[in-house]
Image (cartoon, rainbow, N blue to C red; front, top):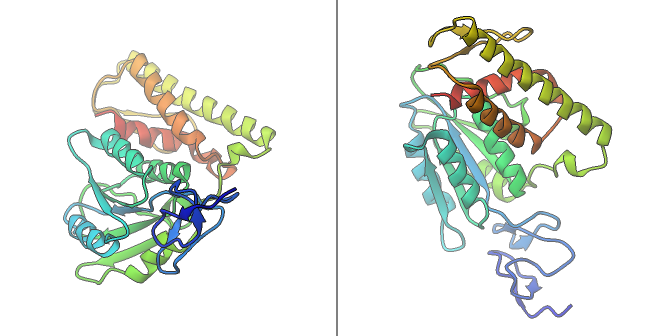
Length: 280
């Protein structure tokens, strides 16, 4: 292989064929502080996910991060939740994750299921990510991040006018490896089959419970219960089988990105959270 030009990845000094990544048996991503490439880590932009209640200063923190992380070598994009809601936000994040800059998500991200979707998007893109929790006044229900969950770590916290932990954030997104490859790509057919079966069964039970509750007279505002699941679902409006089936397919598609035995017991609860956010 003829290595003709410097790698186009910012901070990389290896020679490549001008492809935008090192023309070696492995791909790389920039680590500007070290001026080197990390073998085996795909080129993709890091993701910083903000979360916190309204009034906690997320937009101000997003602007600070954009100024601190952007520069001559890379751009920093701030993605805010707009009229399209969660679906539009996720689509914009996924679109930008195909480039070599930084994506900062400026939204409440108050549900575990929302943060899990963004985790899956980063994992699929092969890029590092971190979570920044902005503490603020009490407001609508907020599921606080738990660093014991892989989609909620690495987790950094700021309160009021606390300075951003920029050194730690830079180390997390520029100096660490992204989440490991999807287990679905490894040779674990029995585990994968069991997980997919449980996911299919759990989501089917949730949809059946919602359809049955509406058939029995449940009205908007009523709580729908699923046998064996502590969490309920408050339906803001009537929802038909076609819409439930579409949302179920979407949830299964996202969850397949990162299947784990640790999530099996939470599948029904996660699907209920997904429905709660999606049915407006």
